[in-house]
Image (cartoon, rainbow, N blue to C red; front, side, top):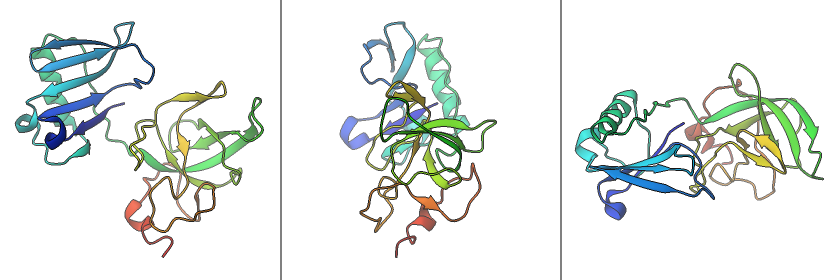
Length: 209
């Protein structure tokens, strides 16, 4: 899993790379040359800052950057030059996908949370905890998988809700930033699609016209 961000105007020529959720993590930083390694208390890498990287990667956008395999290879070369032994892996799979809710049970420690087994096109369904009142077995939904960045900037990582593991988020139209999304709370239920298909944001712009 790899999240990358770049904003030259605000931060200068630095690419921020996240490998793991750093929320509430005691961090340690080590800088060698143009690379800063950020690790947790067990010295596991959770992120890197790459300085003076624009010309090497050819980045033109600000905000989230989607790196291809060649660009990740360049970052790995930079890590070697900086004497770090870590290796980054490219992740080009879609992070907003169509999901099919195969199973749904009630959360044992909540009166409104539901535990779903949702097919997102992987080898086996993923477990996602959802609090929407309109969630039902047999629905086609939109899933933000770990590694997704919501329109608000919120990042999706594997986590827990009330002690139950959850590997993604089943989304509402508003959370997806779809224009004219209904004000009523609840997840977006799709009428068509196949589990694992990338969600078509461009098509969705006309969904509520």
